Structure formats: structure tokens, C-alpha cells
Image (cartoon, rainbow, N blue to C red; front, side):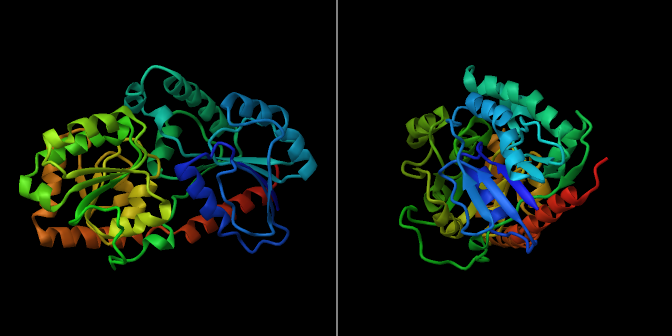
Length: 376
């Protein structure tokens, strides 16, 4: 089976995590040969079945990347005698040669979430999401296979278009996050005390402001005992707003913006938290929530779908739009040890439903079945 993967749009975050774990679990398939186009920042597993190429012209710019996909990639598929073109970024801009199937994924929910789109500032980001919506719908309608990573996302798309061949395969959890509550060495970057931890880049639909406002409503003693720690890229205006107001709204010194933290350090940060919080209102398959479930700590999550699909019935939910509801959930967990233990146990049990080896195995089997399927 000869597969070409166009992963040039996987520049950060979840897209790279997905590809690393998918390629780390290759099947024992005779004749498997995988050619990957990906950004230089994506490290590929050392496997002789995986080759890497770079386009001959710059593809960092989405327009130039689209031209390469339309004009140059079809020739690559012919030369490689590819059985399958896999585009996990959600767009298929390439007309494949005869005999080559196409598969894509639906990963980016923002173009289909009107509330999240309307919160974007006017400019290129809003324009990009407006353009992506019809392009992604067209790609999923034409692809020979569309992989969805949540049932919620699949329902959103299938209400809009007819998908020719759909499969729901959620992401998994990497083994490094599964310490089941056993505490290793405490990261030096964490403040003293057992913190309330929120890991996510700053963005309007991540609701960091509402989280801080909810935290500010806690009794001052709870704020001192369990400081709020925010980990993630701070290149959004809400980060500056929190930095400017945190010591006025909250107990001084109780809110900490740590910025981005190396991925390998995140499990220890989770495991030394009193509670882990996830407040996003626009997700497809929330990797951060899945990783938090495996930490053995109490998990408090946004009640907006698809978070309940992944968090299950036993964790603590709140409205990410309502600081008062966030405060109520925090108090329930921080002030009631029995409830906190129950929530932690439910999160850990739910985490066993998600495993990267199983997710990758199902994906490769689905792709192999598509290649083996006779042409219509």
C-alpha cells in the first residue's frame, strides 16, 4: 500500500500530535510505503517505511500551498504510483490520478461555529475561517473517505452535506499522561500549593477571562490555597487583559500565566494540580481534555459539546460563558474532598476509552480497507 500524506498544514498543536501518534503505530502491512509532506517542525518517527519530502517552492503561505497542491502534487502521486492521498488537515485541493483514492479528516470546528467565528477580530483570521467553511465541505463531499474525530462533529457536517464514506475515530491518550495520579517530581515552574490548572492557548473561545472572573468569586482563602495556573501561548489580547487585572480582581499573587510549556512537562503539571479545568466552547476532539482525564486528578470541563461526549457522565461540568457557574463548580471540587475523589475516579475510568494505539490501528485498517475496495 503506497500512501502519500499531505500534512503541510500541520504547523502546531493537535495536528502534529495526531500525526506523531499515527505514524508511531504503523501496521504490520506488507509493502507499506508512506511519503510524508510536512513542516520542518514536525519530527517523524524513525521508520524505514516512512519517507519525507519537501515541496520545491515555499508552502508556509496558504495560497502558495494551495497552488502546490493543485499543480504539483498530482504529478507526485503519479510518480509514486500512490494508492491513497491522505489529507488530515481537512482540505483536498488535489485531483488525484486514476486509481488513487482520497481520504481527509474533519479537525477544525471553528469555521462551523458561528459564535466562535463572530468573536474573531476583523481581518485575515476571520476571512480565512469564512473561506474554509465551503472549501472543507467540498473536500468532505468529494473525498472517498472522511474521518471524523467525534460523533458531534460528524452530526454537524452530515446535517450540511452528504458524506460519501464516513468513519468516526476519536484521538487517543499518549502513555506518558497515564500515571493514574502517582506524583513524580514537582515541576519547578509551578507556584507553591496545589493549583487549579488550565492548559490551553489563549483565544476568545477558550474563555480564559471567564475562568479568571470565576476564580475571583472564590473565597480568598481558597484562592490562596489553590492558585490558578494558566499554561499556553499568550499571543491573544485576553492574556494581556488578565495580566493587567489579575491582582485587582483576585487575591494578589494567586493567578499565574506561565506561557507555553514543553509538551513533555505537561503530565507532571497535571499530576501536581488540585484540579484540572478545561473551558473551551469550540472543539472537535479536545486532546487537552483527554490528557487531563488520564492524570488521576479531578477534571472540571465546559459543558458545551463535544466535551461531554469525551468527559463522560462523572466529571464536573460548567458553562464556560458564566463565571458564576465556573465558581460554583470550583467550590464543589475544592471544598468537598469526597466529591473531588469521585470526580477524579470518574475521569480516570473514562480515560481508558481512549488509546493512541487503538485509534491508530483503526485508522490504518480503515485506510487499507478503502484502498482494497473495488472501484465503483
